[in-house]
Length: 330
Image (cartoon, rainbow, N blue to C red; front, top):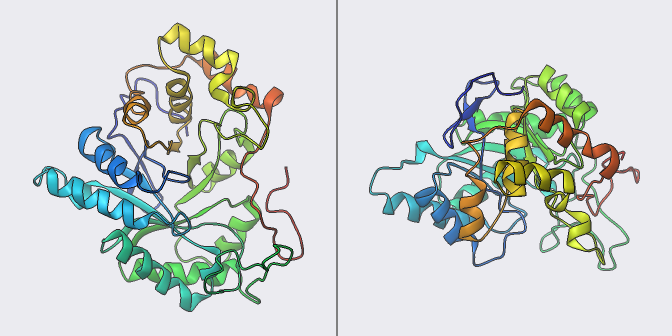
């Protein structure tokens, strides 16, 4: 679902979801953002930079800060920015897949966010943990044993999420970190189809097969970790991040842009929604200056090819599916 020829984009540009709601192409991610800095960056993003799409999650433990930042921005805009102008995403954690816990979880998130509804509610992972107070990872202290919610299927949890739409607590529902087989399991009985699949996607993991599947199912993809700027223990950042890749550096030089801007533009031209995270004003502004230049077909293809030589997945979850099966196959 690449952008159309001569399509003019700006920070307000949106994609249309399967239920005819819209989602902004560019958003602010908050995963791994430093506590104490989220509130101010969310406020600045909305008030000063024009961001309308903010992504958070119950697991990130930052919904309070996100909510405070949203409300400060709305108040200080003096009516120029309204709640309905924003697109807020949060996520259902693995411990809350039991149907009766799903409604509790959204109310918990809405309370922290100080909102009446969220625009998008995602099932964070296709794995159901046993609910254990003060133990969000549902594991023994030595991390050798994990406890799962027995007998709870993805379809069970999805049906409970559909009811949240009926109750107008969420506008759209979707999934995160799901593979085609898991989405198919939901689609077999779904009354409301998943609108979004949020996945790790960047030049080193371009997810071509999953992108094609989601396009056929009319599911919009949101790219997290979009700049491939995580690193593994004892790894140098310049070896890990696509920001330092010579191909992207050369394109950035030709365009008089930063490598981050080139990568974000690559996502957008592929018809993806993208949520780079930052807690600094400079990066916040830099990341949204991506609508006044284009990448050529050749440049897009050059970046597409990087996965062949630099393939890597940064986000391998610290848990398995029941039966000790990996969440991802690669």
